[in-house]
Image (cartoon, rainbow, N blue to C red; front, side, top):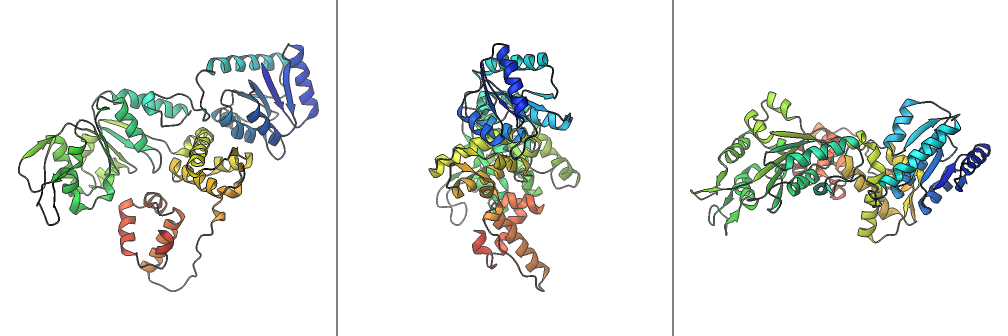
Length: 451
């Protein structure tokens, strides 16, 4: 067994080291500051790390969050003089094995170390990836998590996937609804068929029938060749309808009819065409409230909602932030041909404190921007801060409400780098509303900076 003890008090370090050596544990390293501890834990494989929680500059929690993603099999035991339940829960959620309050009885400390070492041995074959994520059902391998709630969701999704029932996926923008839908497709009976993902909000009402049902040659001006619709393209597989809450009520009736009849008629044709498609739908809206307000058909809601899976926002699964950040760092380094080893403890602490209104997608974009900016082997807070890119400033002046609204939408779109969904989430409106306003403001002076 190899251990490291991290504490800024020399007496505590040497006394625990002597205790362990008396009990036959010879490979015991000591370290008196958090920053050095992060480097040593990343470079040397330890079975167990004892971390003092309260240390100057880089504390034990920062050491845990900065080191755990890179050494997932090391078990961390937190030691502190403060008995605080909230802090204890947070350390466990971030991957610590246990939380002990000083002074700790020798026998209890030794027993905790022994149990941590035993668990390390049991998990040694399960955590071979750098990300350190607990294994999830095979079909959902693209979803990185060690959050117990997420693991329950994926297990449920894996079970539901084996039937052909429609499933409604809900959750805030950027929580991974399309990734989950792709996993359900892979785990289901239609896995050998096509997976067709459609952003419903991006399709104009006038093109709905042509896009979903297809059209024959000459059906309308410009229809120079026949075109398969989404239902036909997904035949024998899965059709994923993203942002279904954005569909107008009149078009909801046409979609419902197709789902009930399991057939469509191409535009310009008279012959029905049958299809065999599994339908998955997703939205970030409250469809039950939309039904009460007559913005969404109740019969369509029941048709697409035989089973319901809700994905929690990233702020409710903050234990996943370190492993997701490590994964996105690796991914961005490959894409941009960079060699960056890690995040500084301060940078990881900053990532943990972010609110993430854009959820996992926002974290991914944040890491990619940092990778582009970084010229060192480590990412620091300055690389993650929005202050590194000056946002446009505006001089207040007398103007119409329309002009003022356009300026604000332009500002938000600049902040989200043109991401309409993320902008809609910040503005508190639908993606379609943002798209309509963008179509009206292409001559706005901020437009060149938005795109």
